[in-house]
Length: 124
Image 1 (tube, one colour):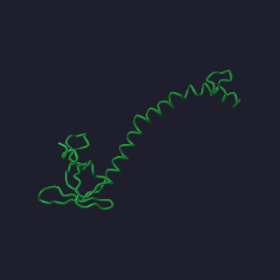
Image 2 (image 1 turned 135 degrees about the vertical axis):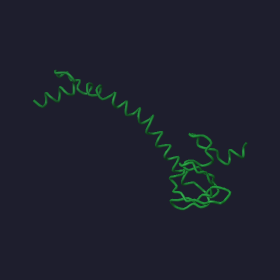
Image 3 (image 1 turned 135 degrees about the horizontal axis):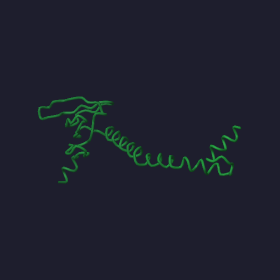
Image 4 (image 1 turned 180 degrees about the vertical axis):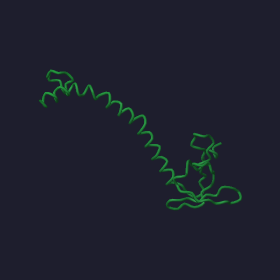
């Protein structure tokens, strides 16, 4: 009884035609393709962005101009293991932030843009 039920589920019909694998593959192929498309269009690019952001945060050095996720712009004065100290104005106001709070290196000129770096300013 259970063998007939398994054959019916695999083949998609009530008779055993020997094409159970093809019926199962035809059923799950659209789902498999959907997962692959989601991986390449959504998951993989997001992981690349996270990896690039983590690399940028770990490569921060004294003198770099940064923008935080809150919009604070400043120059890095000290780099510690998990935090950075930035100087935000000509009054020499210093603030300490965690590294994950750094949005971009350089001055962010647009809402979505990565920002302008020192090198880009020197070339102009």
